Amino acid sequence: MAAAWEHLKAGLALKCPRCHQGEMFSHAAYNLRKFDQMPEQCSVCGFRYEIELGFYWGAMYMSYGLSVLIVVIVGLSLYHFAGDPPTWVYLTVVASIVVLFTSVLFRYARVMMLYFFGSVRYDAKYQQGNK
Image (cartoon, one colour):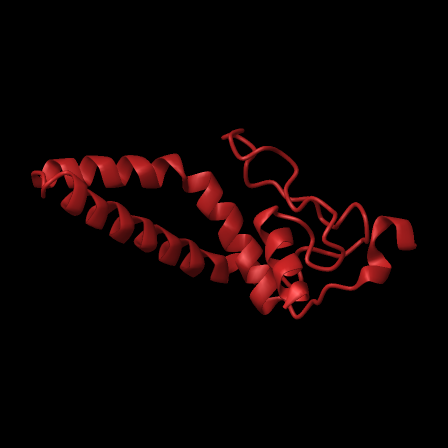
């Protein structure tokens, strides 16, 4: 159970799935010109982030799923807490939130794709102090 918790923490921190230390993205999420840039490999353990050509195409579906989750949560929250406002309020609020979080959704969709389907497991021997 502790290993699963550490794996989840590393994924949420956008760290390499093999060493849990290397950064998976080159720039901050709020840098809208470069939020999608990833280094070719981990700076700590050398793991290649793009396992095969087109590997991250599946992340589009994960990003879509995360967007739908946001739409449902925000829609239900508006219905419950705002007393079922007019349709334009739903559309404006939901669209604004999804657009605002696009770079974050993009990043977590890629992390989920790599962690769930990348066939790579955490290995402590790849951490910086264990080389």
